[in-house]
Amino acid sequence: MRSITLIPATESDLDRIDLCRGYIDDLVKSDLYDLASATRKAKKEIDDILKRPTASFMLCFEEEEEEVGHILMNITPTDLFIFNMEVYEEFRGQGYGKSILLAVEQLAIEKDLNRMTLSVSPLNKRALKLYKNSGFSELFVHMEKRL
Image 1 (cartoon, one colour):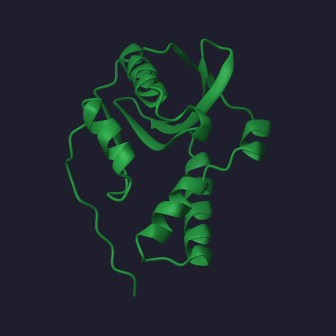
Image 2 (cartoon, rainbow, N blue to C red):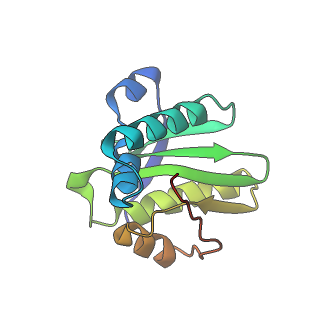
């Protein structure tokens, strides 16, 4: 298992990291959004999330040396919700995703939280497998109809 350190992101990290990219891709793949409308939706939602006082954007480092990904969460007094998690492409398939989730789970335990939740596109098979193998269970199916 890889050792992951979570470090709070800075303003300059926000400038260099595209938090919307994966979400935009998922929206376009759903066939509900074209690229322009998916981009608008993703940027608005991520901007709204980042304005929340409970939002926490963390960089993920292997043993504090190399940045391997990032995670955007909302932490309330009882819950931790993962809005966005990305393992950078060159590190995928090497166990980093599972290690990041374990580091986040440890953070939740240290904060005495009751649960961790997240949403994932059903088209993102790799992420679905990671989350299920990490102990997450499917609770709801969120559906949308574009008008």
